[in-house]
Amino acid sequence: MPSKENATSKPLSRSSTKSVIPPEPSRLARLSNEAAHRGPLARMCRDLMVFMSMLPLFPGIFLPLATTDSTNELYLKQPNLGGILTLVFVTVLEGVLMILAIPAFIVLPGGVIALVLALGTGLIYLICKPIQGPVDSIPSRKVLQTLTKKFPQERWLFLNGCCVTGHGLQENIDRLTLTFGRPVRGIHNRTYGLIGDLTECIIQRSIGFYTKETRYSYEYVKAYCSDPTVKKVVLIAHSQGGIMASNILDQLFTEVSAEDAGKLEIYTFGNAAEHFSNPLCGRSGSFNGRPKRIISHIEHYANSEDMVTRWGVLYSVKNLINNRFCGQVFVHQGASGHMLNQHYLGTMFPLPDEKPTPGEGVDKVPFLDQRVAVDKDIERRKCAEAEKQRGIMRHESMPIGNSEERIASPVRTGSGSLLTEIDGRVNIVGLLPDGGGEEDDSDSEEDGKTVRELSRLWKYQRGGDPDEETLI
Image 1 (tube, rainbow, N blue to C red):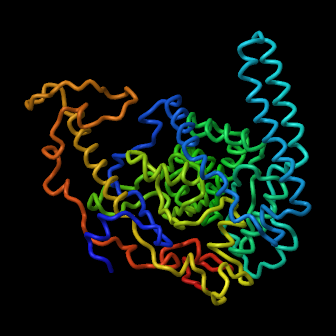
Image 2 (image 1 turned 180 degrees about the vertical axis):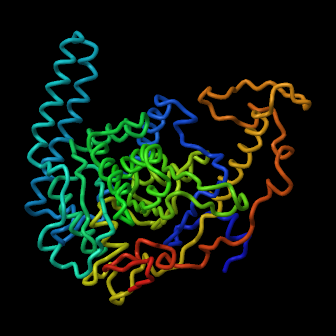
């Protein structure tokens, strides 16, 4: 075990194959979603700027490229190849239309511009229509016949990401069903090319827009959670599906009881969401302890060189320190690729007949069996920010006419701005209870463990049940 000084003061090196970012430590909900701090236009501009800054990582979305597995997304034979070529053509067409739109807005009158936009959108819709699948899909009959166990009290739902055709969704849910031994229903988040899907992601993130697929998925999740015969609801999301899951949670917590919402477990891969909510169940315990939340199990899996995760979950957790992003994050350091089957499940949760790394034993999975390095720096920074916000909130909540002189603050409740120490003109430490501002230098409970020991999702592989300790 490394010393506390080394474990907390030095950044994670690239030689660390796995790292883990612990769950949100704030017990009193002092950190909040970005929507409470900044307006939609500011967040949209930030998303665009961050995305542009990460363009050098774009090729890594597809790497490693070569594959001979027909179930992988980048398999270059039919029926997969037709969908890939269609998406490439649509993306190039969207790029050309965007370039032509700049002079068109200057030269053409408004009515003509609107007509051109409508025609362009309609053309893209028609080109993509043949590659779209049904709104929801179930595993193929061949895959369902392989299931040896029944789980009548469980419901599994999958939300796919960007640029996924109907055929691609079917391959995803078949793979998930084989991996975890449960029938997985998939909701098709339809694709309209890379640029169209990216635009939709930014709109979803910045203004909380509920797409048709998000609304459809929400009805499934709400129905599952409200059904008294259902004891467990597992939601798996990939890429843009993580944004959909984030929006679903925001709405779900306002409409169902905490007991019903507590049936949920959420697991994401390559998550593109900006925030991830999970309300607290109470205020008991120490501030630096891990609080009990409505949803007990949320895990995010990310490849560190995947541009989408660098823009999504990793940026939200590492750079937006005052933002709430609940759940434990497992980071595969140095790994690239964004495809669910090819770059995530095949490496992190391989099927019994697969060897993710040549020369490894049958049951040896490098991602699962190497020890993790805990990113304590992020946890410290979030704790410090939460403590600062607690002090400022206590200052702002003083009653009018309090005997203690109140210094006017330029920031008022409801202004939509995040209070800062400067805005509050207060001595933060002076407003904290004894010991409230001290940092916890103790080793994290994750230190020295493997991903296999920390991951709950792994325990579902091959029909396992973590609640019954049925491990494989």
